[in-house]
Length: 250
Image 1 (cartoon, rainbow, N blue to C red):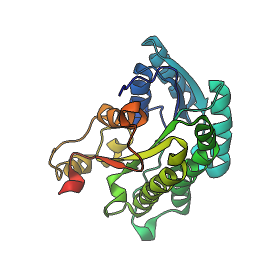
Image 2: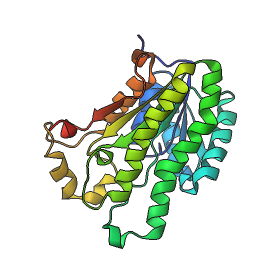
Image 3: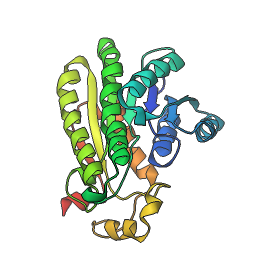
């Protein structure tokens, strides 16, 4: 089966930097019309310019998914308007990776993480999956984390939100799979991004615990997402593909 995505439209949340930009770039190279999404218009337009400069089709749709349900519903409406049709591929990548002990977790940090990591994907799927189901095809890929599979110090809220997203992946696969919509997830390990730079040496130390023994490049995560979004994964439903250097295998 082909990895070609010509004629499809993909919405990638949180795609103005890091893993999201890598995903947008990979999908555009494979022929998808990519809707780049993020809070920063200048960064979004730069990503779109790069994709178009490389011969791809791309547009920017601004959204702050920290607004939860309302922001997600608004984004869904504007994304479909920008595409001029329904969305074929949804990648729920945007996330807030707050790290703090439970007793010191700020309320606004907790709320932002839940709104962005869990509420927004839930309502984006609710707004976009029905049109996919009506068309009889579509793919949703949720970007989760190994932090949602085992406990890491200080990552209780982030990990809980990603664990919930993994459960929703299975639930949505059961709900929409019979209508031709495939829903899967990637569970990501330590990856070199502007956001993860805040972890400093701890990022490398965490990566060293895995068989691969190194930090991932965002393009490696993007390749896995592109596979799950493509026809090459036509019989894959409700799966959580570990892209963590083998960390959850040991």
